Length: 202
Image (cartoon, rainbow, N blue to C red; front, side, top):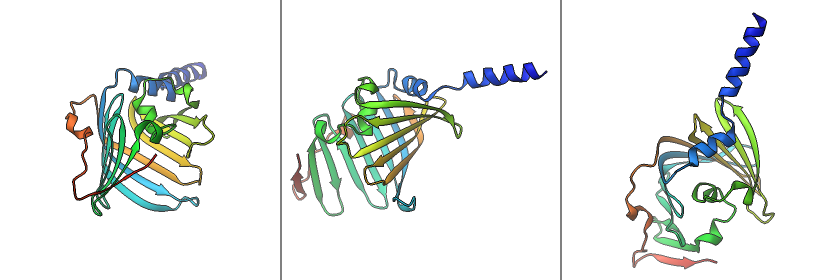
């Protein structure tokens, strides 16, 4: 009886995907992605300093969009060459060269088809809290992000956690997620209105 129980435990543990296996399964043939998100920001004492709600859209390999709805409307759009940060309340836009702005960030993980090992030390954390976890440590010592955690539930993208060099943590939980849905190309296009102030950064 004991041997049977041990055998069943081994089989169960083998059935659980590793974090790397879950990541590879999720990104294989991934073209588009859409989900709602809740972002919580924690300070160095793990105290919450903000909660943000919105929608996330991905169009591989070059485009994405974050639409923040609460507590105030903001947009971040990567159109393939330019990253736009849009604050509609104050009619202000900042534009960045996309390749420069996104280097060593979590966005590259989802956008790029390049091996993770090109930019990150990859650590498979296995199955925890009913999720499969992967830890990524940027190889670039100048990166603002020092640690990235990604979690999957049965190969579905569920959580993302970023730790910056100041110890601040941003946690994202994704719900109502759809893999490879049809997305309007206009979601990833942006032209600042004439009345908006536009700043360039490089």
